Image (cartoon, rainbow, N blue to C red; front, side, top):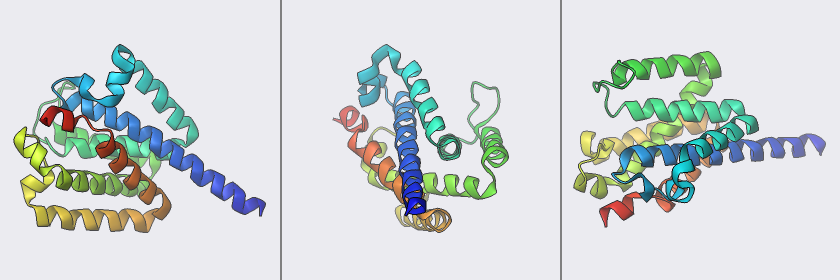
Length: 195
């Protein structure tokens, strides 16, 4: 009985780390993508304190479950770079170079299995988000996987990525996928901007 309850507690802690990381990633994504960063619900709430609050919140996610929070954050960053591999970034290297750096950091810190899980679950979230956001992204000329490679191809990529992630970590993948879509579409600034 004690073993079962500690396993449940461990899952709850991981889910909490996933939720907190999702808030941080969503806020950063909004601030980078929206013309007015304060259209992001979290940035609107925290105002000028958004940056320090996001750092503080992410530090809590790392304390809750380091590997999960770290893996999801860096996987989100790395998958985000896939949209602009040839773009020169403030670091002086292209997006493609940062993708390689991101994957190497993930492998060194989280290991190969967690790296594959993180990248595939975030890729699945990105594909589904882009399938849902096709109309909005088309209007504002935003980068969108479904618009770039085709709706059917994007859906197939989503299925492959989600299947891989769920095979590796079923509970964490479900929690990450549901949380990301809920925060991404339930608390999105995109609707405000497109109105």
